[in-house]
Amino acid sequence: VREAYMRNPDLPWYFCDFPELPKNSVPLQRILEPLGDAAPEWFNPERLSYFWSLLEIDHEKRLRHLMDSGVSATFTAVRRLRRRRKREQIFNLRFDGLASCLRTPKGGSSTQYVVQAEHGKLRVRRLLGIEAARLQGVCLESSAHPFKLSGTEQDIRFAFGDAVCVPAVNWVVRNSIDTILHASDTRRTPTQLPLLEFNPKPSHASNATRLP
Image 1 (tube, rainbow, N blue to C red):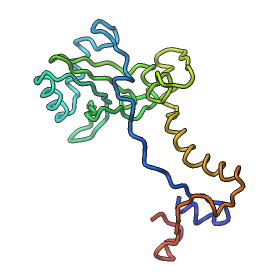
Image 2 (image 1 turned 45 degrees about the vertical axis):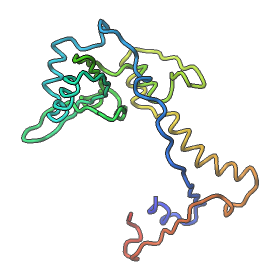
Image 3 (image 1 turned 90 degrees about the vertical axis):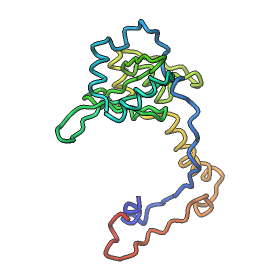
Image 4 (image 1 turned 30 degrees about the horizontal axis):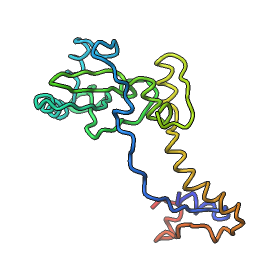
């Protein structure tokens, strides 16, 4: 941003003072579909064994400890490619109650999984299309407008992996573009906008085109 500003000093730049990010109000459990034990989406014993075989060592220890304690918990996981002594695939769990970044379902690390530990038993499945939609801010109970999903599960995962999160975009626009448009509507001059003071001068003239 600083470099773009310095290269284009004649453009009408506005620097908005963003507030603190809002706290997460949608827990993971509200995103996930309540599938029963017999649902075909859950891994069969063979695939579950495959999951355990690729689980990152430290994550496996934490997960087994939780299962031994009888705690009920839900996580998301992704399969990544890591290079230690050799190139290998591993599953990484998230223990913070969040989902990882959505991506189009091409390649191992682009697929996200749901992992549920309950009463000493483990269930694993792929993230559903409807769940990907909810993570992007649509198809939620609190959504202002209904959103109809169409296509196969793979189509839906691909569409939302290539999309943007609606509430996040709304928040950015509301605290930036809308502020500038509101100032224009009320016929205030640009100098009266609530802008951050921004000093683009670098400490050394030779670094004029470099990012800090």
